[in-house]
Image (cartoon, rainbow, N blue to C red; front, side):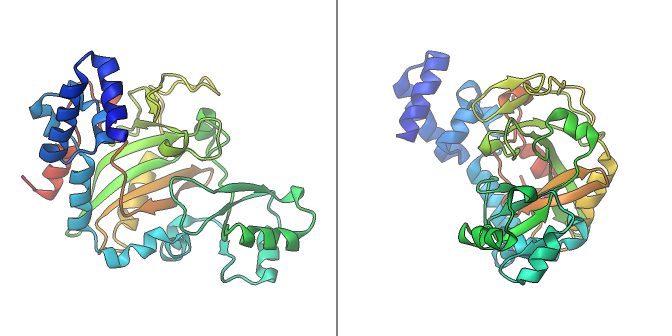
Length: 319
């Protein structure tokens, strides 16, 4: 069904025969390791074969992850508790896990907090996260049990977001996604993106947020943002802040943070880091040992129709 839905959408956009598009989707799967969703979001129907060779498709991304990352260390990234423990130096905020904390430690965590975030320990794509206002809960013990019943066991203090990031969208932490590749003792950064919330408490591209590339050299944004539905944004619809021309604050500190963190678990060499920028500077929100490829080379960001694969190949020296 998914394949036919994609073929229909491509037909409506291009006017090409659905049958030919179906064959082309199969061809891209066989030749370029592209899933049918890749075909749609990267508009592969509009690329020639040389351009398609440059696209970082799902299959190609999977191959890099398998080659560079040792699966026996994935738990350090899949489990938010283990991640926070491993990278506590870079998390830079108060947190506890209800699977280990006592009720007294929970009460101490609540002390002097107006807001905190409760997360499932193994959640993905920002799903299941709740923003908890302490004043809305008169009985801390009832809250203690409620969070455990909902399996929201990882509690983190709210990040006081930098004013410039708040100007984009104040109701979510707008995170910087930085991809690192560790080769020997050198950390490379092949890609950087800004993820921006859109009337939700999360900024994730797969949960209603939008994304735009960041110039790795200077932290400047040159493009419009796009969401998963394909809507383009020159100005944020909630704040009217211009996205092209936006300067990410503390950019050099963001780069230095992930370059240092990337060496903590050298068995996992390809990582996508989500960096929040607080009033105290950059900090780690989370990281992914399987960095999603779906925000790479989106058509609005690649007017030359050249994908991310050559950038990765130049770093890893793969032909």
